[in-house]
Length: 567
Image (cartoon, rainbow, N blue to C red; front, side, top):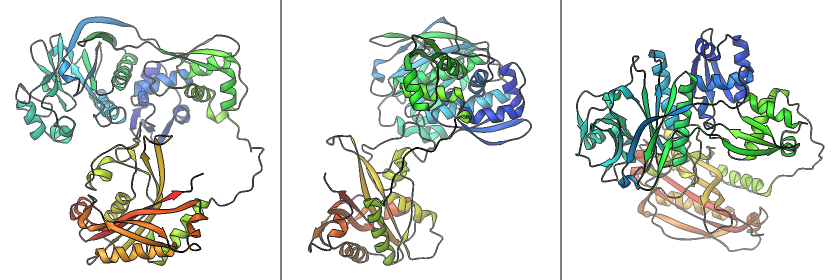
């Protein structure tokens, strides 16, 4: 999660008054942050990714104004037309189709503010932009440019420019091959025969999104007027990112001006800072929060978190959601903000008036049986997070990326999707412990998640068991013996057949099915809410996978899944 370093002096300047440091330190956790550390000059705070508008000191100060009752209700930002426009090339429709622009005039930048701006931009790139895949942001010195602007699809050798952090001109293809940022983000555009490019009327390059800006428009402490471009593959995310940046500049005194973005089929004016309307009822707010309220209370509490509200009747409130609040989607999100305005510290915990008698869940009891079997064979249990990332889960395992459940607002670059397999977690564990003596025998029991369009719900959860062994002579015969013992201890027989799996050596991988040979032993599965179904695979891990995880010795592994009883 982004950690923001904030100087008290910057907060005081934006608030228009000094506030005791202790009061700020107490308030920040109430608006959804963790305080990392602080001293007499600054404070380091970590904000959850659902509030990217707090990734700048201006956004933090805006919310604090409400809590301190300096300013309450929804902020209003005046905009005027810049008279400029940008034309969008239809050829970008399948590459990077959406773009929003904004002009901000009369800004003041010093070295500290420049640094804060760059950090703010990169935090948004990660949280909203999915590391620039979904959204990329460019901020330019407007005075170095001549409008109108053109967002076009250009061939790799069509034009050259001097990218940031370079002193020589490069073609677009050369940027992808030679520039540090080009090599880092080439995977986002290299599959296309043309690349996104933003130029002005003189064909001067502003940006090659989502890769790098041009040196021509680099910001300095003397920059007074800026042009912001946001490009991406998700129109809502593009517009939210622009709104967050533009309103942060407005909080610092900048004047926002709109541009007309001209597509082949429509023309839109950006940024659009009009609020979204939602309704919340008094009854729902009371039921969810668990306190007695009035409609006037709700208006007051929402005002403290800078959300506009009007009373419609004795049970309904019209809510006006600011354009930078991308986290408010449903009525329950509004209710959450009512609770924030009320202050979580004021909520009193209560013991539920419910008496229950608990017992161990059958699936958990079955987990214990699996643990006893694996530990009995000399394995050690590991427990990894259900969240992983595409590189570890697919690329390092030699698998092709396919449908998976992705995290909408990941807290780090390492946790962007829910796992579909346990094997990459075991490989990561072996990588982290490769300095330990061999042999190493590990296993994990856990749930994985699939997208299954044929099911009643599109997401399917499956219980799996996986194990891995590494030492200098690990081979197929050893892993077959391990799996055979596991299946036998579960009271089943085993059928196997040759299996092609990209993560394993061809010809040294097998697919297995558990079969009932005797009725009584099979009850181990049936009594655990399972229908006795067991299937999976095992074999020798491919050398390329082993080197991808920086391991030096052979690895053998298996993964099996269990099916619940059908109701």
